Structure formats: C-alpha cells, structure tokens
Image (cartoon, rainbow, N blue to C red; front, side):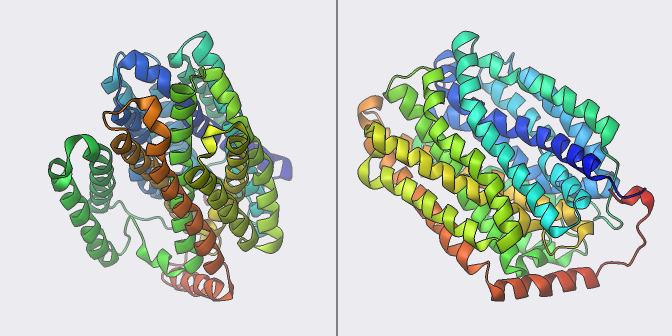
Length: 483
C-alpha cells in the first residue's frame, strides 16, 4: 500500500479524534449532570463516585489488552468494534432505571471505550511517521480534550435543564455512528509485524489490582477500614504478582522494560498525577457549583468555560512546543499552573469569591492544556513502532487510572469531612484536604516533568529503545501491515 497522502492522513486523524471526542465528552457532560442524577436516583457521594469510576476503572483495566490485541489482529477491526460497543452502551445508559443499572451500563461503555483511544493513538503513530508531524498531530489530538471540556459542560447543562440527564448519553449516538462509517471507508487496516500473545494471568492481576484498590478507597469512609481491608490485601498481592510474574514472560501484558526509559516512566507518573487532578477538580467543582451555590446545570456549565477555553487554546500550542523544543517547557508550564490553581483553593478558599474562582479555573485550564501533548508524545516516541499500541495503551491506562484515583481519593476525603454535618455549610472546609492533594499532583507534574525531560533521561530512552528493538524478531512488513 502506498504512503497515504497528506489529505488522507489528516482525514484519518480527524476520524481518530472523533473517538476521543465522544469518550472525553462523556466525562465532562456527566460531571455537570451528577447533581441531577443524585436527586433522581437517590445516590450518595459514593454512588456518584461509582458512576464515574466504574467507567474509568474498566477502561484502565482493559486498555493494555485492547492495545496489544489491536496490534495482533488489526487496529481498524478493534477500533470499529469499540465504536459499536461504546455506542450501544451509551444507549443503554440513557434508559438505566436505577443507579446499579447505570453503573453496569457505564461498564459496558468502558469496554468499548478501551478499544478506542489507545488504538486510535496507535493508528495516528503509524500514520504520522515523521516525529515533528506526529507531535503536531498529537497536539491536535490533545486539543480535542479542550473541545470536549469547552462544549461538554455547556451542552450538558443545556441538555440536563431542557430534557433531563438521560439525554447526555444521546450525544454519543450520532458521533459514534458517523465515526464507524468513516472508519470503514477511509482508515486502512494495520497491525504489528510481531504482536504480543495474550496474557490472561497478567490481565486478571491488573483487574484485581485496580478494582480492589479503587473499591477500598471509595468505600472506606462509609464501610470502615476493617470492611475494606481484604480488598487492600488482594490489591497488594496483585501488585506483587505483577512485579514477579510479568518479567518472567517472554511477551507480558505489561512490559516492565518500558519503564527503564526515564521519559516513559516520567510520562506515566505525570499522566496519573495530571488526570487525578482533573478528576478531583471536576468532581469538587461540579458539586460545589450546584449543591452549594445552587446553580442550575447550565449556569454551572458556563462557569466551567474559564477552565475549558485555555485548555482548548493551549493544547495545540503545547504540541508545537513539543515538536520544536521538546517536552520540558510545556511540562514545567503545566506543573506551575496546576499547582498554583490548587493552592488558590487550598489556601485562599478560591471558590468563595468569583474573582479567585475564575482565576483558579483559568490556571487549571492552562496547566491541563499544556500537559497532554508531552505525555502522549513522550510515551510513544523512542519505542519500536511495532509496539505502538502497547506503549500508547500504557499512557492511556495511566490517564484513566489517574482519573479513577482522583475521583476516589478526593471523593473519599470529601465524604469523610462532610460527615453528618450540613452539606452546604461543611463543603468548603471539607474540600480543603482534597485541594491539598491536587496541589501535590501539580507539584508531581512539575518536578517529574523537569527531571524526566533532560539529557540523562533521553539517554535512558535511547538505550531502552535499542534493547527492545534488538530482542524483536526481524520481519519484513507487508503492505497490509503498514498504515
């Protein structure tokens, strides 16, 4: 198959971005709808956490499996399957009769979503082979998150106020169908010349680790430490099992050799920290604006625009900076801005004043806009192209794991702080420990970003890539194996 034309490459990028749009839009719209869902479904704070974390948890558990499966059987095939499952899951969510059903249908959504973003990133990586062109494409990819953050709260507010919270899931149906038809028509099939074999034991260990850890964090405030202790023990045993079992496999689900690269390891830590900050930030902001300030969903969504607009504007700029100057500058900018934003809330209770609330939202939007492109580019750069799906899946897993932990930890801290007190009166003081946690996340982005983007770090990436390439079986890539 000949090299794709520039126009065809941009079309492939647009189709892949559609999948990111519906997945990320789903989260931002859902956050605005949380108070309405809480009232109609009589959900507790823990129940609201599960509507978000059931989705991100399944995503985090299955992303690496989806990435390696796509490398093995075909990226377009897995991508299209994911679009179908995600769209069907969205339709089921819109008719959920109770909280338990909604959580279950969100998990169906997540099974489809796990086949979208890492596979789409693998398609992009194999379509844009020039490093500078790929960095710009990833910047556009990151900008889609900004679009979802800008459009999601407002669109969600309009839908919730005019039709009801169930309508937020309808948005995914036409976009998912259009992406499916366009993929069938324009995206070529591709696969790795040598993909990994399935690793069912590793997959079960990952599910046990993520699931038990998240359950323990969310349920500890209401169930008590003794009730969640067995889940903590299982999570610890699963982590030990991963560290012992995976290096002994020739083709593990999680190739721990990737983490010998300081930029790759740094990108993983930064992704977890940044998206934990995003998950906690949206969770606290949405509940405050609607349950404490008493705003309706639409006006709460409009208040999110000062955060969303900078994300939209800064993401493409971050992509250009990565292409021209490397990842360090955008990571430092991101770390400083996210830390400053969280400090405004932790120290000065920024939510109690319109001016400081606005400033806090703008700073967070700038920080999050700059962080996504360097994460993705660092994760996939320097790794063998044949393992692009696995490398992209680890980066995507880190994002989803971070968002899961952010909602779980910050929600648990909030639930503990509020206790039996009046929700409105206790919210601001109860949220302060959560804001300090988000401050720590911002500092992690700043420090790890600076350390993992220097000359020493690049040297570890080069050595890791050489070792990974040297152990692969040389194999000629046929026409069907190239994008």
